[in-house]
Amino acid sequence: MEVKIINKTDEKLVLEFTNASGSEMNTFRRMIVSGVPVMAIEEVEFIKNDSALFDEVVANRLGLIPLTTDLNTYNEKESCKCSGKGCPLCQVEFSLEAKGPCTVYASEIISKDEKVKPVFDEMPIVKLLEDQELKFNAISILGKGKEHMKYAPGVAFYHHKPKFIINNDAAKINQFRDQYPEAAIKDGKFDEETLLNEKLYDACEGVCDELFKVEYEEDKFIFYLESFGQMTANEVFVAALEKFNDKLNEFEKAMKGGKEKQITDMAKKLIKK
Image (tube, rainbow, N blue to C red; front, side, top):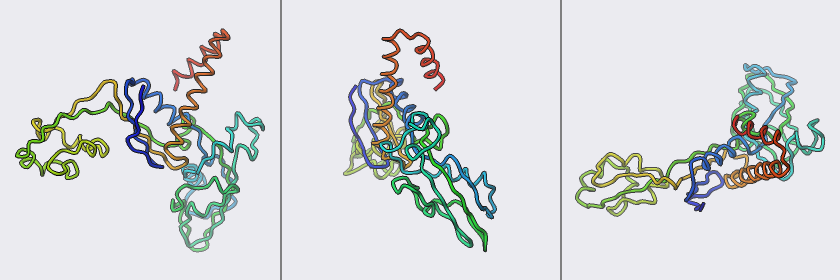
């Protein structure tokens, strides 16, 4: 398998895989969405809530606020030294106190660890009217998308790499130019890089088969990862590969040890995912 970076930013990662299969791509996708742990608010203690929203609704909104995540500092509860009881190594405490009239934003949440805080300051939580108050304490922990989507680090998807069959006939391009996206044609020719990076080929296909057609390569894939902001897209992908490698090592040890029941249990878990 060969990997080529097509586009890389903190928020987005686009990769091209060669000599790959759909099952391998789907494994990467599943590990990203459901296997990479990120921080999210899990428990909320309301001291006062005069807003129009029930405690449960506000708590749900808090849980869906993306939080910056540091995997080097914090442990998942089940693997922490505290045995899941909760300690500074596996959870972070938050608090908020606000009085209306105002809109309460994520930026007003106070974290006991400045490295773990809301990614987007301007995410609204609730609107308070005159003299209404909101006061709570909360706890965030590491969790995985397979437990709840609030723990998902981003979205991942893929498709076979398109292969463009292009005829840059100047007369015909001028004839159909208005029916193609403006960015798809540069200097009188189809721009293959823009067509691929901006995914404009779908809009170009079917306009004129004599000018432009699309075929798909069976062993080549374009893989997209868009981070929700808890970590950079690159960090999410690396963490997914590390988690997958851990699972393979665990499986290898079980095979060498002849632990048939453990192997069967692991296989059942993989099937459920």
